[in-house]
Image 1 (tube, helix red, strand yellow):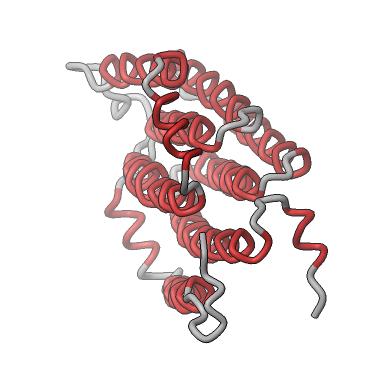
Image 2 (cartoon, each protein chain N blue to C red):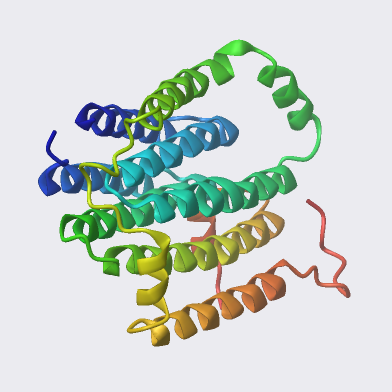
Length: 170
Length: 102
């Protein structure tokens, strides 16, 4: 079962290496999603299934959607059409797809019948994490909600388009 | 079938952190800089979770959830700033921001 950890670690490092060397932002995002999924598998192997689920839901889901929206808002005009045509070529998504298939095969192997890591790894489930969060870390949870509220107000203020100058564009 | 040693998880976290740092230092496109920041935060969270799982305590995962909340806040404000930068300078080069006076 240790092998699954090392395979997903290798997938994470390779995908991260591809993220910082791509020229196109969308290609880099595909690799970044694969890298985050690989780190989620690493979390599962480390006996932290709740955090693995959060990694997939929030990092690979919500944060990446935010990135895609920003890139969509930035690339308007004929460049988008060219990019759209380029996406249809298999060499764009072949790399991320291959790494994702490795991860999928690994996950299918891990969660297969009778092979769960629960037997040999000390799993810390969502119940214990929740008890810790709302017990000794209650102040931290309050501060995190304050940070999120500040980010919400800040992002709204920055994203607002100024009316009188009519600069806008983009 | 032993568990994964803590050192190996920490080596993975260090490798991811260094890759993210290289991205921050090398790239000039501000979207890539933000992505590399996400990689670095994720690597820090991985170190927390690995240390928490070594002693089978939930504290590492609680810290990871705080890092997750902070990363979400950082990326939303960061991407709003990216849109503002692009609207102002029509470029994504971070060096363009050094022309700001004010």
